[in-house]
Length: 318
Image (cartoon, rainbow, N blue to C red; front, top):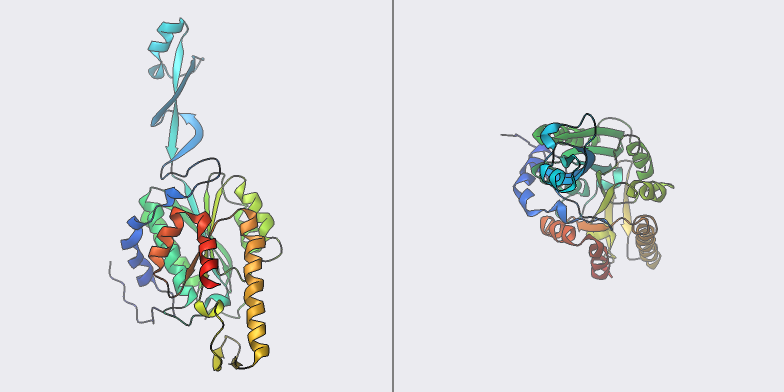
């Protein structure tokens, strides 16, 4: 597959960079993420019973049971006709919830957060279909809230990549922010129990009900967060004049003033507290990845023990 792309791959989301992440898919192990009560596997046990891959148990024969599934050994031992039941295997839906708000269109090191978010989403998608799972995406941000339902194989991946390019496009019209809680509310209308949900966001735009929706989702699904950030957001910059460009205007940030330094520090501390209160306390493991990280390695290690990743990151930026 040949994709021509003249865009700057470090500042603009592109199909080429997302397709290229497939070469790293074997390095990830989504099956290592566990709920409190059970492990996730690439092919997932279904609650629906019928003729399938794995023997589950035997029970007394009932009218209408398939005679081909008779358990003759148990029948002979008990004197009553028994039939075998099997546990089906089915594809697991994995939904990537990707933040496309204006705060993602920022970066001071290596790449924009939007580009990193798209790469993370693509890599998780390739890993999912490699495991035989179905991949879906829900984006929320400057172009609204939109869902592409989970689909298996490369068809699902191509649909996801195409959707992400459109969702991150800043040329479609006036930007309007959409918070995470709106996305989660819409997700809950279509998601099936037993799905996996991965939030890919900088978590600056949460909304008032994000925690409540996360708690509800976690009752029947596995939920994981990938925190996208830039080093500038967690380290006080050197005292100097910085030019800052936004979609609305340009301005100069004077970090030589102690008042500016104090405001930046307060904002950083407030954001970290918000993550703890709304994401961590909702029981959602959070894996932080920065724009200048060896992000595939960081993500791989985080997936192996997501509950420790956030604490390790807090220690590194303190």
